[in-house]
Every structure is written in structure tokens, then in C-alpha cells.
Amino acid sequence: MLDKGIGKVKKWTDEFKTFAIKGNVIDMAVGIIIGAAFGKIVDSMVKDIIMPPMGWIMGRVDFANLYLTLPNYEGKIVEYPSLEAAQAAGAVTINYGLFINTLISFIFVAFAVFLLIKFINKLRAAVETKEETQVASDTKACPRCFSTINIKATKCPNCTADI
Image (cartoon, rainbow, N blue to C red; front, side, top):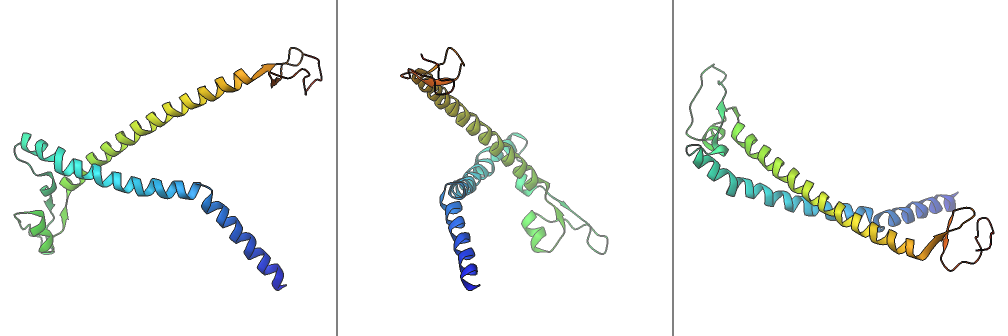
């Protein structure tokens, strides 16, 4: 009974090793790490490069500092000089400027991923076309059954016709 349990554990361990080592998990981990780093780069680009000129063009608006303060529990709306001051005072705020920054970051990330996938698909298509050309030059069709056979074959392995 104990040997049977140890055998199952060994089988699961071997399956897990195969799963973890055979690319899918490793590819996914690399993708997540690169994606997180890429997200930080795009986020910085939006916050530090794109939004300041947009705010300047729109009359010196700092999108990160756009917010609405909700009334406190006594029904009074207190004005604060900045979002940080409102949050430090414990006010409940709707941070629509930060939401705009996040939305623009998402659009840039989505567009960059779209371009990356488009580029990868072009590379894949080029590689597949090259492989198809290579396979086509190494094979021919049997004149009798039309199956694909090696170009050097003198007899079809499918219909046994002489070629």
C-alpha cells in the first residue's frame, strides 16, 4: 500500500517536472516578468512624458491632481489644495485624473502589445512559408493516389504504385 502511494507521488513529481521544464511555464514566467517591466515603462512614459505637455496645452492642468471631494459625514464639502492633502486629511475623493492617466497608459500598452503581436505573426508567417517551401522541394505527389511522398521515392508507400 505504501509503495503504491510513493509511486503516485513519484508519478506526480515527474509530471510536474515535465510541465515546469517543458517551456510553457518558463515562457509564461518570462512573459509576465517582461510584461510587468514593460508596463512600468509605459506608465512612466504616460505620466512623465505625455501627460505634462497635454496638461500644459490644456491650461496647466495636472491630471494626477484632478479629483472631486465628497461631502464629509456632516454634509460639508471641504476644499483641499491637492489630492495628497485631501487624502492625508482622510477625505473621500474620486480621483478621476489618476483614472485618466491609467486609461491612457492602458491604451498605450494595448497598442504596443498589438504592434508586437502583429510583428511576431509576420515573423511566424515568414518562417512557416520558408518551411513549406523546404517541405515542398523535398516531396512530390504520387500520380496515382496523390499522397505526398519523398522526392527520391520510386514506390508510393500508400498505394504501392511504381513511380
